[in-house]
Image (cartoon, rainbow, N blue to C red; front, side):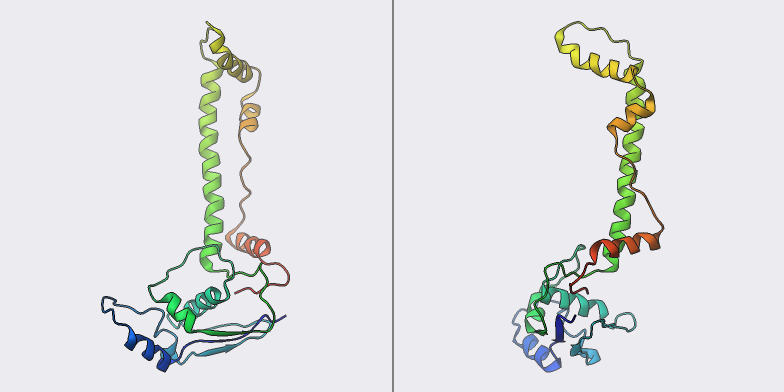
Amino acid sequence: MIYLNSFIFPNENIEFDFIIKEKRTCYDSFYPFKILSKNRFERIDFEPITILYGGNGSGKSTALNIIAEKTEVNRDSIYNKSNFYSDYVNLCEMYLEEEIPKNSRIITSDDVFDYMLNIRNINEGIDQKRDELFEEYLDTKYSSFQMNSIEDYDQLKKINNARGKTQSKFIREKLMDNVREYSNGENAFRYFIEKIGENGLYI
């Protein structure tokens, strides 16, 4: 299924007309202007699967981010915009074959890396909490507590709870399991499986 038929970026003449009309002179960069046009990259006609290729700095990521912005698909990671980004996107044209489904999205390398790092950060937080619960269990179980009033009842319950359970059971009741970690390749694959469904535009 093809949802996006073609996408047209502004050419050098259109960019020149915009920049020459810009009265403010406080900008050192007009990004994303002049990035794609310097390589005469003005149009993409899409197939069911379309691959962009080129060297570093050739504008692949810029083109994909612009397409994602114009099509208003979902995205996870933030990306760098400039003061002229929306102006550039407004100068672009797109032609649709079908209405773009709401589950469509752009997937970037940052998304995959963030997904893997989030799993690690969750597990690090769980490990830290587990260490704290180890100390809490020992401190509570072996504390020299004496109940003096009804206000001490909650503390008494806590101590009896610790004394009536093994350390492992005490901690398991208070802590979620670690998120299973996979290799980087497996995590990347899992991210794609989770995010890519049927009938969508994926950039």
